[in-house]
Amino acid sequence: MHLVIPHRVVIHVHSISSIAWTVQRNGLAFLRERLDGLKWIWIRYTPSGGALAREIQASLSCSPDVFVLANHGLVIGANTCEEAELRLREVEERLVVSCRATREPDLPSLEQLALSSNFQLPDAGAIHSLATDALSTSIVSGGILYPCQALFLGRRTPVVTTRDFLFRSNKEWRTRNGFRPPALLVRGMGVLVAEDLTRSESEMLVGLSQVARRLRSDTSIAYLSDRNVDELLRDCVYGDSQLNLKRAARAGCDNSSKTA
Image (cartoon, rainbow, N blue to C red; front, side):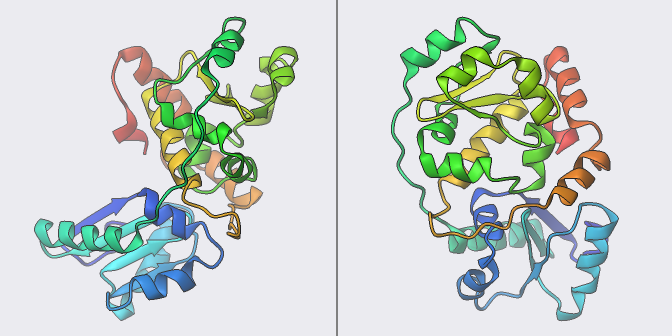
């Protein structure tokens, strides 16, 4: 993808605001107004790698400087680093979305649940909104919004009640998710995370919570299809994200720059 873009400097980001717009079915219509006056183009969702490079290459006839990738993020092209940074800043300012306020988690109850499990409270308090905000819970449980959600968090983040937590096994959650779930959303109460949660998984959960809080109740969401998710997990261009992250955690370093 970076090679086919003709600009000397290319910045690719998975920013909160851009993803909040690009996961909406009518996101393109909103963006036409917000990005008016810029040389930009919408790129339909296409798996990373050669397919995305070809899709972007086909769009170059209109000489865009900004590529908005559906269910993915932004690519900014410029001739200098300074110009690229200014362009990215302007796009981000135009796309800014306010987030909903959410109520506080029930920490005492979560701590009690954690005592009898291999889960614990997250270090990042923002993650709790995935379970304390009913709309966020509904959005996240509805499907996969963007590739990194599946690659780092699995096919689905389990939403459980207190009873579910006490009587369902880790094996069942693992089967549903594809690997050990990084987090369990205890509906209305808050979030518990795996004891071996990696830094990258934690950051992904924070990012997911921030995206969900920027989507409205009347938003029609374009989730990735089951086929899209299957392709991601089967043909992952980043390698085995979970294996790489676990190796990095054991080595005591953050491997996110190699896997995302």
